[in-house]
Length: 100
Image 1 (cartoon, helix red, strand yellow):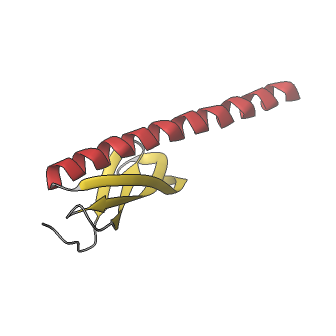
Image 2 (tube, rainbow, N blue to C red):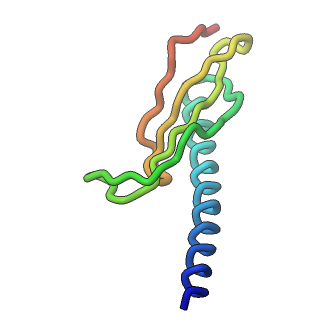
């Protein structure tokens, strides 16, 4: 009977890493679209944290925070943050940045 629990734990562990990969790809799509719409140059993306969260609006889902680097003038680099509930974009926070 305990082998079933080990197997279940293993599959949950594998599913979690596959799901986190999907979340990372969704974050990259969101930040690319945001930078394109705002006229910014996208540089890089990194996950800050991911955790299980319960909210009234979304229910039980994985809440992820990403940091991304961008440039407004093509010379300097700035860092913004992006938050996702599951695969859906919640908000994008940008600091003040220089533009051309």
